[in-house]
Amino acid sequence: MLIPFRKTAARQKVSRLIRQGVGLREQSWPAPAASDPQGAEHMADQILRWVQRVMGDMRRPYGVDHVALALACRDEHGRVLCSNSFGVSRPVDFYSPAGMQRIAAFLDDVRAATPDGNSSEIVAALLSLGDIAYAMGERATA
Image 1 (spheres, rainbow, N blue to C red):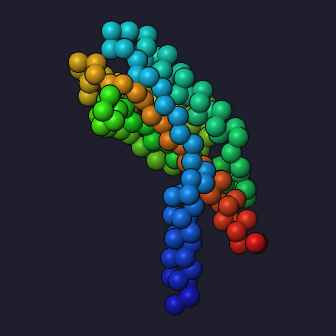
Image 2: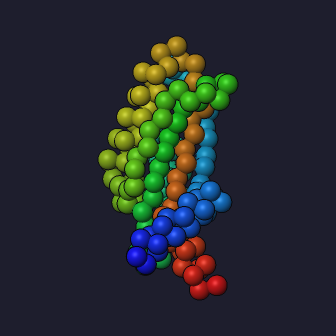
């Protein structure tokens, strides 16, 4: 009976930490113009460099270095037009061609979701599971 309680308590603690913003990084960029053929390529490069920079600053306690990345495209009213969650990934995924391909595929989806080019910004949220693990360990010893 004690094991399920511990799992529930840990889950609640993780949820509370995420709501408090622990391990969460956010960034936004103006959406590339639909008429600019190189805009999406440049945007993919900017997003990838941001992800790599953020991952370089995160904690990695006990070898926990996983991240969860989500991208969205919003219109000028803040309405989400297109979004994609990359799930839980290892940093190496964003240093290989696969990382760039996944981001480029999201930007292809943005173009498909906004044929008239009416998107205003691309938003990224990256959650560092290492930062969450560190905070859990820190609070356990406090």
